[in-house]
Image (cartoon, rainbow, N blue to C red; front, side, top):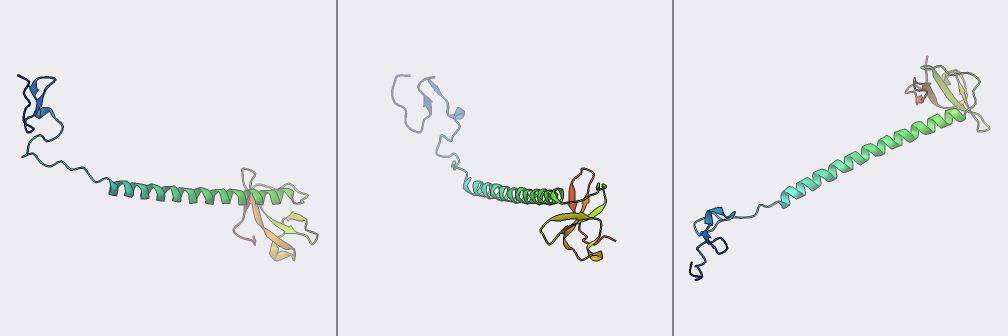
Length: 139
């Protein structure tokens, strides 16, 4: 063209020397629909809340698992430090007691059959790990 400036409502590309209104990714005339940005704040807030809830829930689960693991460790440490003169059998229930001198001992005698100070009932699982028995008295 002759180098004259085109009006603002005419879409003319000076570099390619072409009218390229149809190639633009945005509206180029007054009759075109209004382009508005999408409000992503609500979506972001929902996503953040969901993520926070998921992380908090997972943290609580991991914390509970950790506490259970530490309780299992303490139970096993108590039993391994206790005195006993027999070889425990897998799957059998045993009872942990404390003497008056503070020494722990493991016994096959149930708490209802004696007057010792009971620390709980345990059984040895197949992994050689002591588990606290849900029943303190085993018939």
